[in-house]
Image 1 (spheres, helix red, strand yellow):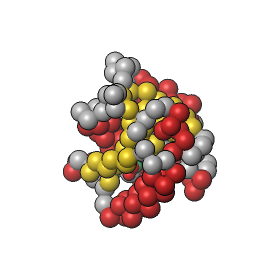
Image 2 (tube, rainbow, N blue to C red):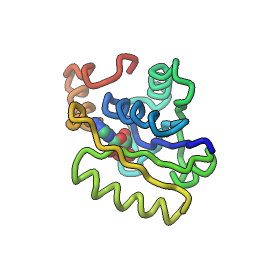
Image 3 (cartoon, rainbow, N blue to C red):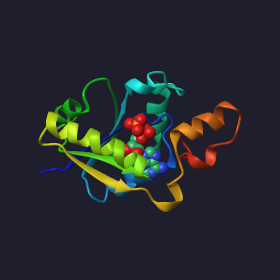
Image 4 (cartoon, rainbow, N blue to C red):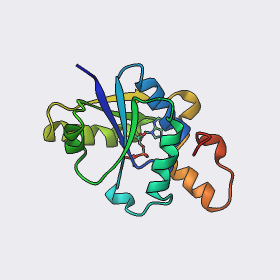
Length: 151
Ligand code: ADP
């Protein structure tokens, strides 16, 4: 059976840390669906969602088993509709762990077929965060080093 994983997040913006998780995930899964959701606590995006889809798609233009979708529903239902039995999340620190632990328990309750797989950040990306990148960008700082070329 094909191993399909969703990789949900805000990706506002999509960073080298996210890209690293996807490239490492491809060693484990046959297909990865990068799924851009509207996070209720970050309802207003900084970067336009359609533009971000376009940019992420261009990062993976030569890798057909990476897809990009936008969703506005339960992540557990999104997984079902794509026949995905795996959900990838990245972990940078204990703060990420506390948050992810709760979410993954709830996702399993909502969809018992959905297994969350955590990939620990690569050390060079441990401090890369979309939140910090948005702040620096807002005040005119150069953040290109933290983002894939296409983004
Ligand atoms: P969310 O708003 O759902 O937390 P993000 O776009 O911030 O979405 O992150 C998506 C996923 O990528 C999360 O699991 C997050 O922990 C992970 N992630 C973010 N930055 C990094 C990084 N530098 N290294 C590894 N994982 C990361």
